[in-house]
Image (cartoon, rainbow, N blue to C red):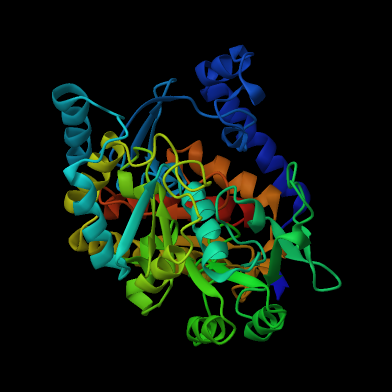
Length: 458
């Protein structure tokens, strides 16, 4: 693996300083709001919102489609899309109509009573992902947590197998890396882990079937929790045959296979599960299915349902640890139905994936012309460049290619000129509202940024 070495670091530092100064000068209202937010932990509503290269976040005034306007009046073409939560676009019309109807006309935002929309959403998810039974949450994190509890109950085992640098929200078991002795060790920065990771988790590298089998051979793994592709450490795509091997190993060693499609839903109407023919026992999804209204879901096979049902002592209807007061509420379910029925349609995905391909090919062309040892990976409507070539095959290899200073420069350069990438990494996501002109603008700015970086700017 070749990590970029052709960048003049002193020149890069001066570019970052220049872009940070421009960012601060252009956003006095955002900066003032940030400095006044003394009653918020970290000065933001949720601590992740501090992940901004300019030293303070943009403050939102309004957002529609793939456009965001900040409190200083600047409009942006948004490829971050709430880090996938707004993949349907900001405030899509059908979702807004359904939400307003529920709030204003029908009432009962949350009553702990089911609505007719719930069965429609469950049937739609079954058609998209192939699993027959569904339950709703407000986040994919909760969907993962509840799926893990059910997996332990169904198998009688205690441990979860995850992949290094995976992303499953804030699920405790997922913040693990392979330790020097093969046991799970906590990722750096893991906040307040309840127990040592080795007590709950086994971990392997993505695309390493031999490593997966070595962990499963201990006989204590209830479930393999996997993204179809790693998505939060750059995009790490599966090798040919990896998922077929993963399914076979899970079956052979008596572990359930949980596929988390929360980010990989970008692969099409049925996510990577439908696009690649995956066969999970449990599937988790969240973020985008509610069009921005907090929503999540997990689906289970008939076999898993039967295994859970064989434990009448398990309290699934009260305080057994699976469920939540606001989950499945009428507003959330109405938003999911509208988004799935009218927004994230097969035609929308065809449009989004075409733009994802245009973006990916454009980024690759810029990198090749500049002679930079970088790579770009595409997951249909989702694309991301990485400062290494060839593209990493494991999470650890992708993590080793991180370059915070390059990330800061490219994010700031684009943001200062009206284009947003997700602040957590260099991901660009297409929405139904994204246009070819939007993609071409991002490519133009990326090429200008690379020119400034390499000294080839005209």
